[in-house]
Image 1 (cartoon, rainbow, N blue to C red):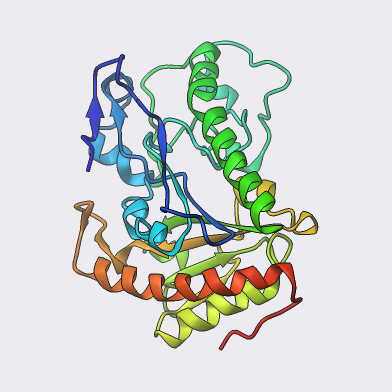
Image 2 (image 1 turned 120 degrees about the vertical axis):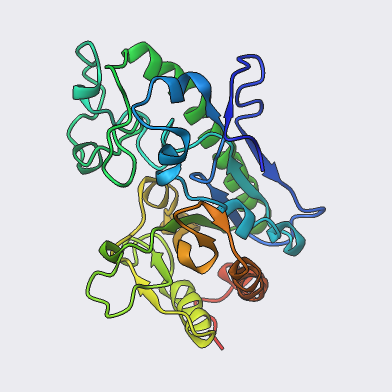
Length: 301
């Protein structure tokens, strides 16, 4: 794992993200892990009211590790190195809270979204436990530089991967990979906290038989699976899940207690079981998704 902080401007986020490539791409599935980055600039930590450990509270810790083997079944994995507390890729390019800045923001900035209101815009105001990040207001120039240097290149790379998949297979499925805290707040209307939440924007971004397949396979392995509540899929799911264009997207949220100690931010033995279970499902899915080209539906069994 990379150092949680760095101070060398020449090598900071170099590269800001990477693609783990298979030897040969053999499936229309593309994987993305936009929130598992763990490289924290020292200047960012110095500007924060929080230490590095508390800043990591909003990180989808180790999600890239969970999916790191997908190239063995012919699928690429795109993963960010920078943390979501620094730039959140699962937002519009400019969702910013005006209260965070020392000047009036340009008119093109979205200052009124629910995500901004919750403190979790493209440049977050808080970490996930509602702790304020910054000691002092930011300049818009700083936000603009981060977005130009990190946000746009990541999305350009993701679009390139999806375009290549569409050109090769005639259809593509993006699996947007995330994790969720096991805090009680995630247990909306469930007696037990879900192990997985599958988000397809209530059927808008992914054919229902794909969601059903994943739900059935996970359930058969003993996991508790929820659909769209409390996570229906964010900006990435909505932007890239254009099913009418044969481009589909589903968001997967994984309960962190399955594979890590959430207080110490360390992996535990559950990681191996989780990876093995998911790879069995993904391997089957990688074959079946090719039927998106010729069949309206395939069996989940």
